[in-house]
Length: 406
Image (tube, rainbow, N blue to C red):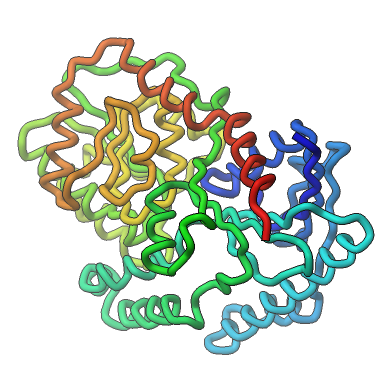
């Protein structure tokens, strides 16, 4: 495979999970395979140099819009003026970004422009845009519409209507990404690919599904001991309406009422809609629940290994990194019916047939009643090695980049 020369922008981090962490792993692997990566970004926004800076094929291009950026910093917390300043900052930043990429492309041409975690926001003439997006847009907004009554109950009428208006704006033509700039889109699952085709009119040939890579050395089974008669259940991720914490807690309450000895850990903080902490505070069996609002990235593998099952009943999930990481650690997972991770599960994992507390409780009961031996860990681990090995995912990414042209 000939060397690829890539202009890259987007979200990259070594200290977070989800797409930003996966992007860092991908770029490292692609550099190791001979790709040249020129990364364009405002370093105050995304700076991949701590992760990639010493590699001889990597170059960082500082891209700034100082006037709009300074204005945004001063007024971003003010009503009305703040959102307008943020939009101005975004527009001027992307204009500067395209200008910088265009200048570099004219000096030494790139093969592709790779947008990590976003859809392309403009075009450099003669340079195909490939977007590795975080799934279809508006998933959280659609969840706000579906769960408006619940949001009203936990956060109050005024906040609920605010979020309803914001959700409708997000789903309006003005709130959607400028799709035509993306010549090809990569998403984390077939679930998301189908949504892009059915909801937004994408041509099927212009969308690919690719799982996120997982650091299989950091996430491994290790030594785990199960307490007989007890099931330790883990929720890991953002607390937002789409993630269905309410379903998790309702199912857990039902499981306890059936006499099962389950222990719950919720690891994640409340995002977007304030008030969801009430669901945790009102759980009728507080002695069975631990809430950890923040877990350092390097503490996540140990956290996962301390549990018997990871539960992610999310709606419209593009790709749940915590699900893949749990598989790598050898524990089973339970996912919602519209969770894209269903493409990558093992035989011991469960996909909910219905979005109800009863269905999730039955799934928890199935895991609780199993009498699995040590070999069961290997089943999950082998699925993780099959789908999420960094080098394999990077090779697939490079294949897509090679084959897709404007």
